[in-house]
Length: 176
Length: 144
Image (tube, rainbow over all chains, first blue to last red; front, side):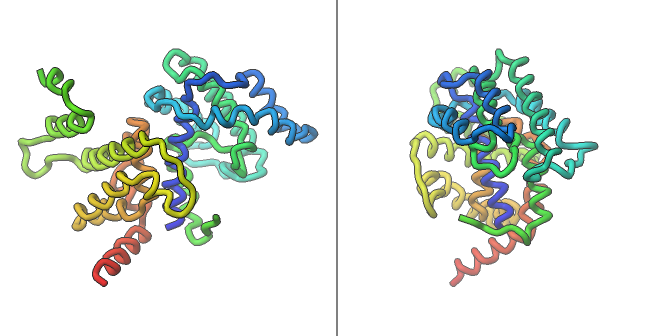
């Protein structure tokens, strides 16, 4: 049952993230600065508290919701394909996917972020106006409570997570 | 002409009319395919969910579902009752956070609703024995 709740919650959260990425308010930090901060998070020597402090202005705006109508199915399909390209091989998920502290997972996520950003840039006329900026903020996974880099919850991500989680049904426990 | 008439209707009336005119009313045996049926059910629940979301409420704690998504939860109960004989759909309705996730996905449109796992067969297999246990427990509680 916890497995199903997990998938249900993940679906709900995934759609809410898409709404946040579609926020129509101009973000206080823009793409270039957010990418710099994201890179700094990867630097072992960086002061994470300072970086988190700099990002504090983003959270209240990011929490606002834009319209899901800003996301065309074709765009989401492309983002899904980008996940498949970096996290899957021959329709099978690679072993490092969603593994905390895995170099492979980290590399895949970086490539995935670059791919998604490219899609958003290429289709800038049909995606939500500030989606590149908000995606860059979303991709700084360390500040969103995730234990590892988390791709957007598009359909293939949901199906891969379901397959992984259902393999560990007995090992799942509910925490509050 | 239909479009002209629909423009006067509420969103819910439009949705109902749209489903009615798009239904196969010629062949008695298959008035909707399994895929169409699932999408119809999710669309209906998504409509109630949108109503709840438009209230803009926020909540924390145990009863978050019934507070934030009151109309949605009521609609799920009605659906669970409606699908008493249809184990697949009833299973879906008996795991509220799961059906909420599906209705949320329904809001994002075709990307999720037309993907490979969005079929009653695949969703039922995701539910596996757990959904069955939930239904049986539910029915036992109802009879006590």
